Length: 505
Image 1 (tube, rainbow, N blue to C red):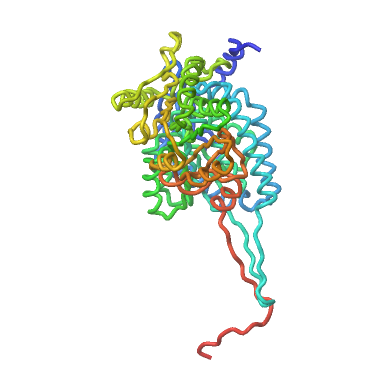
Image 2: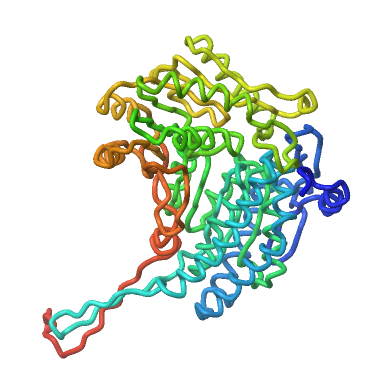
């Protein structure tokens, strides 16, 4: 297999790119204002296409379509088994489109195509997983009360839900929200990140091909300050699920309060990876390198703080230096590329500013080398910050790039305190062959998710989310389907002529 896509295949997929319109009420339509913005390729910094720029009027139109589809359309009233046929059909179409989606997402985001292909495969499973779960779990409970009453619960859809998704791994994260929202019987307005709009456009095409009733899923492109803010403020939208940076999440929470929307927030992270002296060293090293340098370091669960026991620190750093220089940097379309360009110049400058700050704070900076043929792109080479301290800004603030800070520790309580001494609490990783210690540390670290002797592997049945500034609520499994995208309703039924208090008789 060639390491790079053939020119013919590449050109065939690229030639399918068109200017992007909104998808509202089952139709692809331009922006109400006819305005648009440019979508830029992170590898070349050249324009890919134009994207409809949604604003309040576009959101109003989408909300009206979603409300009509929910109130008067067939979706919410449809039998679960019939609704799930659509989800299985969507998954099948994604499977047919995996290569096209993977290539266009790599073009749009700068993520290596080998990594986007794996994420696209996960996207199809998101729909199948929630279809299966809805078929088996979308039921309530019954409680009998002394033979006089039976009280039972049912789950109803929330109604119109707004989904705001990020620019890293966009297709998978869009389906991660859309699948449970649809499975529960809601109608959806998706506002994707403006920096990676191609994936949401492809999802709209998939939805259209699957034949979902009009208005069930709507996609409005645009900027967070306009389209996103209008979606949060719209009174016909009953819930907002957001994945993105913490500062944006706090604004959404404040604005959603005006209309008492339920919210789910999956926010930033500064996740620790703790390496004890008795760990399986090579596996821990593999996990540490993969966990920060895959996905170009643009991963909310990335292990950006690596705490290494002083007994193995020198060995770890020696191996890390070798590995960093061997990571293949280059064209995202090359299947051998391991690290591609960052999403845009603004983010590129932000990450580089943190590297410069690290030098001022006293870190030694070790980096790979960006090849000359990649100079046009937004490349930050894999970067290691040595002699780091946990109180440095580069160890406290989310960089969201391929930058690892290495921090020495000596004892268990010391490293737990340091791991928790940060405002975030999304994920964490512990490497030790002392299983008692592993459980102690895993339970003591303030994070919504901990991996013990494992890299970041997902089980869709388990909750995904963080503590502190890393978010509110959980996604995944029944936590999404039943606890966020559904409303429990209780019905009390009298089974006897029980006594009713008589007032005013």
